[in-house]
Length: 178
Image 1 (cartoon, rainbow, N blue to C red):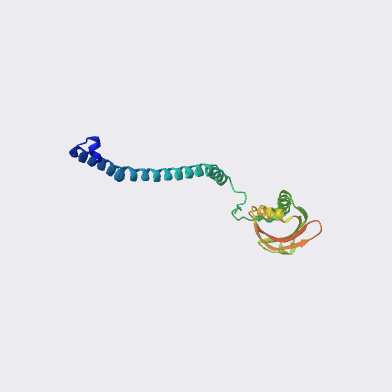
Image 2: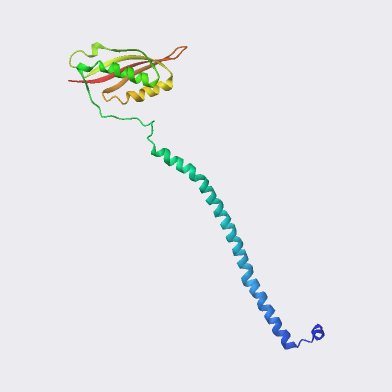
């Protein structure tokens, strides 16, 4: 046999085979599953690192969104407590209306009260107003009118297209008091 060439006794050879078997068993039972486990951990670590990098890149966007939320939103409409305008100061609305129209970028064509609605003990006064400009500015004007506490309602809006601009005719009711 081959063992006789090396002069290894049978007893030592058996012990050697048992030791080699134990080593192979440890390799198969411990090291291979451990290396697979480490390979899976490495994949998980790489996946988590890519998620962390993604979160870091989104952090600036998140910070910008938080900063924008803290700013006062200019598109939020105000809702002032409703009041009345004294009859003696009823003409004040025309000046206030002209100022709101000017700030919104429109041009006032006319603002006139309907004196027939002022007769008697009426608690409101109807104004007919005509303004010209762009629709975007009309939206700004409506938001500005929402800030007027004694403005009761806008009854009618008529929009007419002209070559140079839009014309907006409105019937605006203001609340009057003593």
